[in-house]
Amino acid sequence: MKQFQYTRPSTQQMALDAISKPGTKIIAGGTNLVDLMKRGVTAPDKLVDINHLPLKNINPTRNGLHIGSLALNSVVSENELVLQKFPLLSMALKAGASPQLRNMATVGGNMMQRTRCTYFYDTTMPCNKREPGTGCGAMEGFNRMHAIFGTSNQCIAVNPSDMCVGLAALDAVVVIAGRKGERRIPITEFHRLPEDHPEMDNHLAKDELIIGVEIPDNNFAKNSYYLKVRDRQSYAFALVSVAAALDIDNGTIKKARLAMGGVAHKPWRLFDAEKWLTGKTVSEENFKQAGQIAMAGAKGYEYNSFKLKLAPATINEALKHAAGLV
Amino acid sequence: MSDKKPCKSPDDEALSGESRREFLKKSTLLTAIALTPGVAVKAAEGQWDEKLAGVFEKMLLHIEVNGVKHSLMVEPRVTLLDLLREQLDLTGTKKGCDHGQCGACTVHVDGHRVNSCLTLGVMVNDKKVTTIEGLAKGDQLHPMQEAFLKHDGFQCGYCTPGQIMSAVACIREGHANSEAEIREYMSGNICRCGAYPNIVNAIQEVKDGGQTV
Image 1: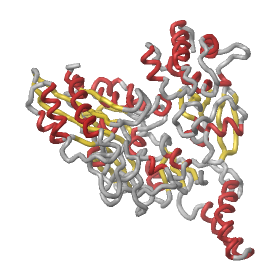
Image 2: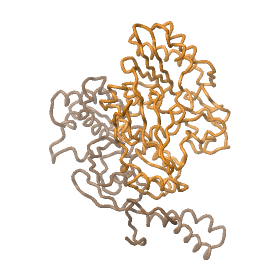
Image 3: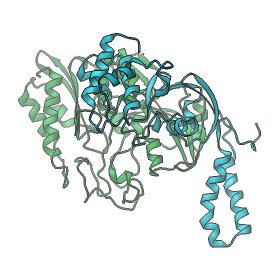
Image 4: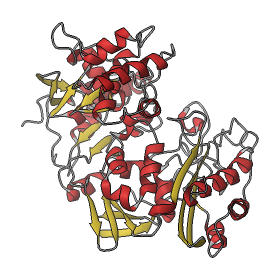
């Protein structure tokens, strides 16, 4: 690992000053960043350790819940308010990584984690995300884990987060601090599609810091489910995952929220399927139809075309669990 | 604290102006240019910068390991795993994949299990670390160590320290209530020999025995 300087600011202002310098990276849990540094995928001159900032809080707000960006994934997943108001978030968190990693990983770090595309990690291979302009190894390579939605001719990598898929279905909002003050972005607009700049995973500016995430109150707690399909039963990245949240009144769907993981460069909200489900009755037939609607625009590559069948089946299955049909 | 001492506190470091590191890089480069032919300068430059900067960038770390307090000088890039094994001679904690995928390096930091291979030493300043060497009380093995022996919870033994540290945490966290739950909450520890059924049995016995772990 390349040498770097290390600093440990104790206030948000000092952290913001520190990260605005070129060659700087923020470290929180370090579960992804340290790995990337060991592999030479990234080599910052300076690490800003933000763990001493007071951003671990989980507090109810007037119309929802605020979760500090330094709250640990394990702590959030077992927090009573989270379990009571947003069990979907807890399920998504527990589906990710291992207990050890969840004890280290933070909410903000989870949002900032990089893709696990093997071509991004292998510094001997071309990768437009790691080194813009070098090409994409995955496009014609072994692309079994890769995206089927929103790809570009530059990059077909997927966002690896489970937590963000849950947050997307819960209409969460990312709270960001910059030197000019705070701003808020819906989680669905926080990450971006690769387009011509796959090196940019999200819309966070270099001199900004995620300070928390806000989830608005909803009626999904009773009928939500996170279903993750992977190569082994636990501790593996998603082939496809689905966060399903339903507001059901007397067998009729009043409101639906659906998001998918493992299929795009960002948590993939299924707006058309949600709209179609609204007002429909709870039935497997309708859930299957929603799965078909969600697949509009999907495109498979040599080794990941199985996702074109797996994704709608997973949507149906997640909805069945959410609705209590299973 | 003088800038010339090979020790510094990273807390609230003054962030304005040129960093010492940058200064060092430039000054070594200037010296090198003055003394060496051009081609050699380029080849040696990067390496020497790194070596020299490394000496100056060690930082003071206070850490308590298995009840013993240590004050050490460490480079920021040294992981807790390497610190334990190379500097404190605690080689019970194993380096498996070194990338957070196998769990062989599992230790407890302030009572919580973590992957020491992905933890920078400087980030556990003022924290308490427990390794496999810290579980037994003298010659008296920890109940989980006893149970692993009794149930043959290992074959080659390489993953065992990590398995045991994880198993103790698994019970403390309250995640050892069924075979399925144990398997899920032990999923961060890989065993190539496939001792999983015996590991689960060992954990279940300790859990059912109700001893304090």
